[in-house]
Image 1 (spheres, rainbow, N blue to C red):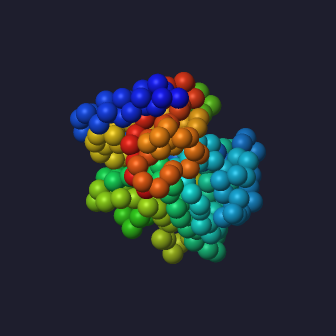
Image 2: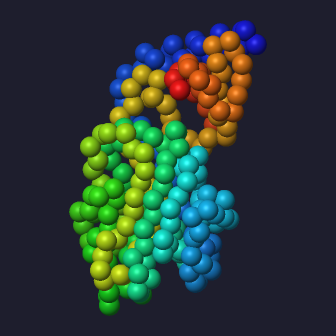
Length: 235
């Protein structure tokens, strides 16, 4: 145990010397598989566990508040709004998701049947409105390719992501993914785009826990490709 913990501490020391760099993590929504109909409304309590809603990035979310949001047809992510009501999604981020973000890039698409008759002009993330009109997704080799929309943030710590259309037309929107981009320095400069397998915490005596101890911790993130990152965190 002592040798293992010494190695962990060494990894943290190495990571601390990292230069500033851009890092990101991605939250991906799956939708309703290949079924050509919209799924049922997504329940807030089931958002992270209900089959088909989260494709990737659940570890960055602690809880969700959902209103008038559905699993979209053809695996196009999640659908906002009905013809009579506006949808809103609030993602309360976990400790892993709370970063000093300067940009969110969303992959989204205009709802096909609304595209001409009741087209959605804009949507809003954390109070920032999309700069361009929402377009339809393309298909390449039978797969959807979504337009990307950038939302510039102020670099302060991101504790939640709030997505809404804010559109009185109530035209609908499909949202496939959210990529959070931030400037990482020192021990924060980790490869967050890889899929996390598990997270463990060690106190300064080398005791392991699934949750952080009070005081100084060494946080070890293991990815599905077998690589590991060690971070020093203080609770």
